[in-house]
Image 1 (cartoon, rainbow, N blue to C red):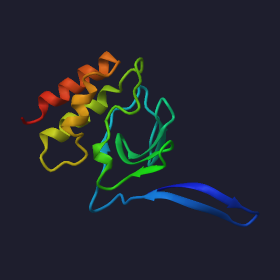
Image 2: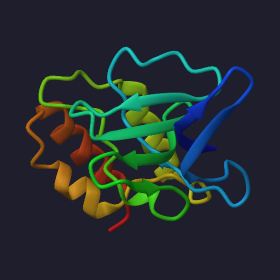
Image 3: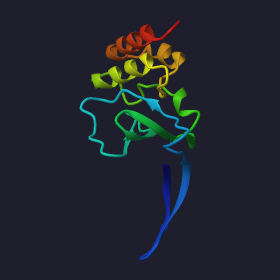
Image 4: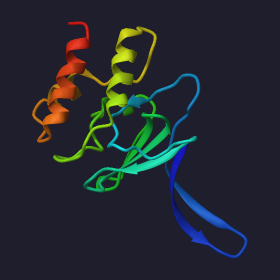
Length: 147
């Protein structure tokens, strides 16, 4: 999976600058995020933009975010560092949360072999988010984590 920017195009060609790429198979690296409700329907792959349009997120399926690109800093997040981002990147101060996404994160925590679990530090930071639903969701997820 990759994020690329169009460089040039002609009648029979298109040239792209690849900004970053990651794999979707073994070894996997992704972050389970909480999407706004209602989420975009995803058959296989969707792009989301954060409310401030700073980050572009690539979801493979469901709420599994495999890559992100920071347009302001021209930084790619993929295998190994995607998990360090906040699971609430798509939520602003008034956005309603898609409750099944929180449930998916809680299920992942209950299964020790599951990947994509947000870091404790990203969840702790979300406890001060301006959206009360994010603060509550973050507290619920932190409570489910082992101390």
